[in-house]
Image (cartoon, rainbow over all chains, first blue to last red; front, side):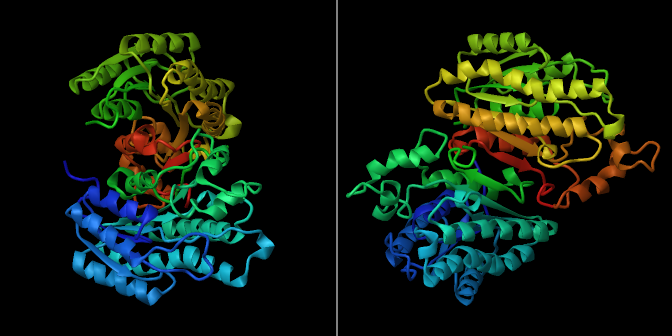
Amino acid sequence: MAGRVAGKVAFITGAARGQGRSHALRLAQEGADIIAVDIAGPVETIEMYPPATEEDLAETVRQVEKLDRRIVATKADVRDVAALQAAVDDGVAQLGRLDIVSANAGVFEVGPALEVTEATWDNIIGTNLTGVWNTCKVALPHIISGGQGGSVILTSSTAGLRGAPNMVHYAASKHGVVGIMRVLANEFAQHSIRVNTVHPTGVDTDMIQNPKIWGLFNPADPAPSREAAAPVFQSTNALPIPWVEPVDISNAVLFLASDEARYITGVTLPVDAGYTAK
Amino acid sequence: MGKLEGKVAFITGAARGQGRSHAVRLAQEGADIIAVDACTEIATVDYPLSTPEDLAETVRQVEALDRRIIAGQVDVRDGAGLTAAVDKGVAELGRLDVVVANAGIASFAPAEQLTDEAWDAMIDINLSGVFKSVRPTIRHLKANPEGGAIVLTSSTAGLKGIPNIAHYTAAKHGVVGLMKVLANELARYRIRVNTIHPTNVDTPMIMNEGAYRLFRPDLEHPTREDVADTFAGLNAMPVPWVDVLDISEAVLYLVSDSGRYVTGVQLPIDAGMVVR
């Protein structure tokens, strides 16, 4: 059976690990070739979880190639529009086209609003908001020139729809992504390019599985743990689960990327176990 | 292996249009089907409604896929009839996993000219009928340790205020409220509840002269071709309407394991009508 995105090429940012790697693998399983970028190194002031590494990005390459799909991977920071441009141009030159964009790269920190430093604010807005715009900006001309339409999926968050405490920078960036989506959905509909956002609740990756986040959920606990944080995470969701898996977000991305969703555009799609409905 | 192998889906309004498409698409993925449709005319509806022959055709198409289907002629205004149909279907097919509350009607008039009869029939079918369709399914869904999935068919008119369909818009907004409550009430049982919001779909509900005339009041007998540009003008994407299969694919995403943690969501399949 032909894959659900067979013959297509997908550009994925933040592809070294976590959700980004999962998107690369899920789309490759369904027949897509991949253009992958990741900073594969630290973002200044983002310190609560370890950064992705060049080895992580190499592992994504290995896993995609094991599926007999092609992948062009580049170490690039989404804040560096010239580097992104070079990465996507090189990928399209090698793979021949561009159909799908997953603007997934993002960083997270937590802290009371008035304690957020300028540097942390700038790094989160720069990566999560401006980085998403940079990704769209370098990718859209390739999709347009293909003349066959395409699908752009921007990774927002439940924090793009709600204002949970201690993440003013992150929530601002993720709400801003919705604004990018709504404008681009209108501007590019004439080219049959669809633009949607996905809004995950907590996903089981390093971004939330770290002592600082666990401690935020259990402030009185001297030794915060994944196990102790789980019921508190669960209390934020309607469904009786603490977090979702990267593949759950990938399945939403795949659905939106495929022709099954050929007339879905301008949509905010929560994959959030009922977090925003609760 | 199908995405719904071994599962059973209850679908209202299954005789034709979106309902039949959902029945066939879910059956293609391995589901057995409990189907109901009123198959009756309604005085305030100007276009021909489904017939017993339509429902029989749905049965034929599902059975051609080697799936089982229990079909009954039931009006969604008949709560007791729905309960009986669901219970009978579950007794014969063994379980219930998926509910698609799809049955609905359309009629058109400016608000000041809407009759009591047109208002009441609309709310009875498109809002109360959704509630009465879901209510008898809950105890069967709760019996599954792995839960289940309910999809309520709303509309772009469940998110926006569209002229000349005040009753339809009120009913479809009401469906969203119903979904939000059910999503919270049933989450603990791993039962997910979502709404879908189609733009115009290529079915008899909009492909009729009464609907055409709304969009082309300048023509005495407007046709499908006459309204295509006007319909396309409602959407951001350059298409006048979507196909029933586009809605079925969204239903399949929501009710299959792909959507296992999606609940409480309003999902437009609307070619950008709402974002526009």
